[in-house]
Amino acid sequence: MGFEKFLFYVFATITLVAAGMVITRRNPVHAVLYLVLAFVSSAALWVLMEAEFLGIVLILVYVGAVMVLFLFVVMMLDVDVATLRAGFIRYLPLGALIAVVLALEIFLIVGPANFGLEAFPKPPPAAADASNTGDLGLLLYTLYVYPFEIAAVILLVAIVAAIRLTLRRRPDTKYLDPAQQVRVKKGPDRIRIVKMASEGAAAPAVAAPAPKQEPTE
Image 1 (cartoon, one colour):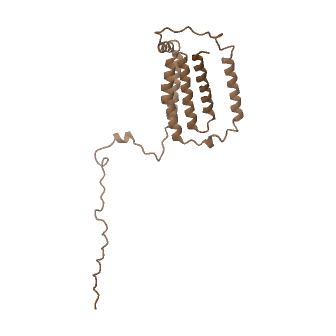
Image 2 (spheres, rainbow, N blue to C red):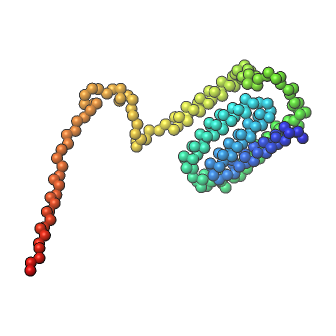
Image 3 (cartoon, rainbow, N blue to C red):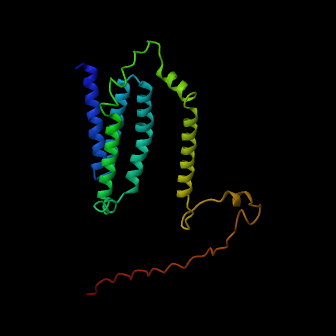
């Protein structure tokens, strides 16, 4: 076994263990950190498969931006773990059934008969001046341009829906209305003079100390 295959098994094991920790940890912060580890090991696998651009994008975009955002959101929301796990036993049979179906589908797709060097032989090595970034962009904007545009529209709809669901007008929230700021006029709208009494309550008089009497003989 060569060194490259050894690294593949090491990073693949780390990815599987980290993915299992993501769904078994009780602390949401720990689950997010294990997901970051899974992304890093997945990026290493991409680099081993000579897809350096995908590995760098996975590190910069998902680990450097998306997962950091998820981590801060989870830390600020103060998620009640007891409430989330209240219906765990009730939905356990349904979750187990879905897990068995997914495992069966994965086995049918990546099984020895459909996935391997016999079904997909090893591609020839790329030239020294080859650019996987250029090849990926060429395929993305020529052969897969319609799926790319559909995915962009779906993401745009998801962003608009998320903003619409979270944009709520609360009575106790202080905000500025730009329409009222534009309609302001010179005069009583800009300043209001309030007359207040300038004299305060008189301070209580302090009693003078009594004169000291000398003793008489």
